[in-house]
Length: 526
Image 1 (spheres, rainbow, N blue to C red):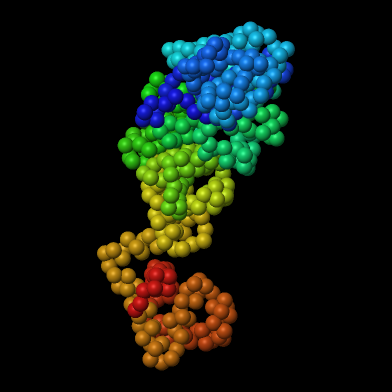
Image 2: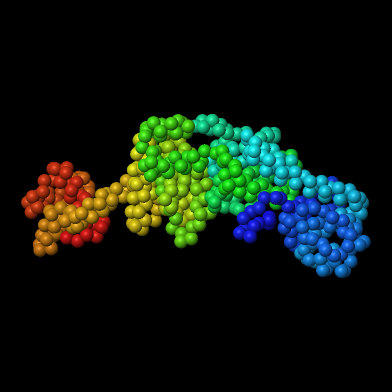
C-alpha cells in the first residue's frame, strides 16, 4: 500500500486510487469481472479511453475493447488498463494491473462506473479535509468515511475510550459508561477478552490495516492502528455488519489512518481522549511538579479516585538490547489493557504504572500475577512499590519501585517482578555502607564468636544464628542443630558469657540478625 510522499518520505494528503478499488467498484455493478495484478500502487487520478499508443501516463487507467489488445502492448510497462471483452492479457507486462469485464457489460456503462468511483473518492478526500473545521471533527470524518466503507465505524484511544462512534447499527457493541469520567468506552467484558486474544495482542504492533476474523465477535472488523511520533494512540475500526469489506477498503483505511495521524502531528486535530492528559498529570506528579493537594484532588475527582485510596507504583524495563519505541508502545497498550484501575505511561525511559488498588478492588499480588505473562513474553522486569495510602506519596512509591528493580535485577532472581519490601533491608544496608564499611556495621559479638569457634573448634556462631532465626524457640533450634536442649542451654550460656550480649533485649537481637544477614547474604568477612 503506497501513497504519494514528499522527497523526505512524509505522507502527502490527496487520495489516489489503485486498480483494486476500481475492480471492487466494477464488481458491485457487474458479475463477470477479473483482476490481474503484480504491482498495484495508489497512483491513479482519472480514467481515459485509449485512443493511441503513445504518451500514456501511469497516473491514469486506460479503457479499451478486448479485440484491440495486441502483442505490442508488452511495451506498456506499469500502465493500468480496463479491458471490456475477451482478450489475451498475457500481451500486457507483468507490472501492468489489468481489470477485465465481460462483453455483456456495456463499454459506456463501465466507463460511467469508473468515473463515479473516482468522483466518490475525490469527494471523500474533500470531506475529510473539510471535517477538520467542524465542531466535532472525528464524527464528521467517520460520517464521510462510512460512505466509502458502507459499514459502521468508530475510534477508541489507548484506554478504550470511544472518541467517535457517530452511528449505531444493530449488532455493534453497546458501549459502557466509565463511572470516573462519564465517557463512553468499550465494554469491560470485551476488554478482558482482548487480554487473552492472541490475534488482538499481535495486532497492537501493526502499522498497516488488518482484518480481525469473525471468530470472536461473529463478524469481521477492518482496523488500523493510529501512531503519533512512533507512539500507539488508538485505533479506527469498521464493523462488517451492512456490506462486505472489499480488498480495496484496506487502501482507503490506510489513507484514513495516515490522514488522522498527520492532522494529530500538525495539531490540526485535537485528540479527545484523556490518556495524554493522564500521562502529563502523572508525570508531573512523579517529578514533584504537583505538590498542591487541591490541584491533585481536582484531577482525581475526574477519575473518581480519592487521596486516601490505596495505590501501587510499578516500573517496567526491558532486558532486550533492541527495544524500539514501537515495542514500548505495544507493551504500554498491553499493560493498560491489563490494569483494571490505573494508568501506564512512558516516564524517564521506562514504563511506569500507577494502580488504584481500592478502586480496582485488587491487591499487589493479583496485579503482578495478571502482568506476569506480558513480562515473561516481553523479557521485561518490574519493580513494585509498597502500598501507599496517600496519593501525594506516589513520587516516593516510584523511588521504591525503582529501588526494587535495581536490587532485584542485581540479585539474579528468576522472578519477573520484585517487591520493594523484599529488598528493603538490602537498600538500608546499602545506604548505611556508603558511610561506614559493611564489616564495621556488624555486631562485634559475632566477631568474638568467630574467633572463639576457630580456637576451640566449637559451633557457637552457628548456634546463635539458628536460635535467633527460630525466634528463640528452644525445641525447633535443638531439632535443627541435632543437639539436646540441655546442650543448647549450655551453648547459649557460654555465648552470653563470651560476648556479654543480652538475648532478652529485642534491639540487640535485631542488631544480631541484621549482622548475620549482612555477613551471610552479602559475603562480608570478619
